[in-house]
Image (cartoon, rainbow, N blue to C red; front, side, top):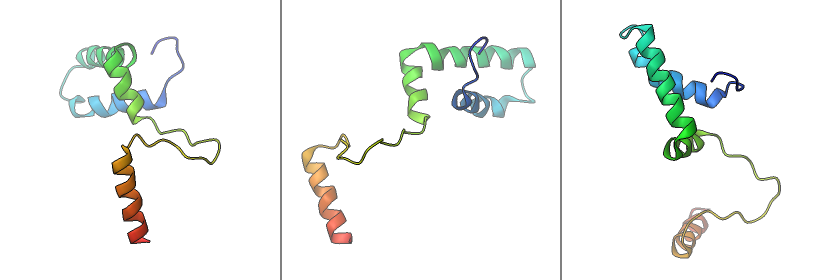
Length: 86
């Protein structure tokens, strides 16, 4: 990340990915890997999506029903299990 402010989530993922190779590969190779991975996670649509998935979800700013992405049948089954458990 050259001119942009450092993204702590991106930095953590880059470090996690490169950690097994530190001390094994030369610094120049690690930097090339880091640059390629950073590009993939910030510029490529699939990489950007993967990076977005590891980010913490933002809390809702109000209390309301929030869609879960579950089908009606799955949501009904989940509600049934909650009622049985509680």
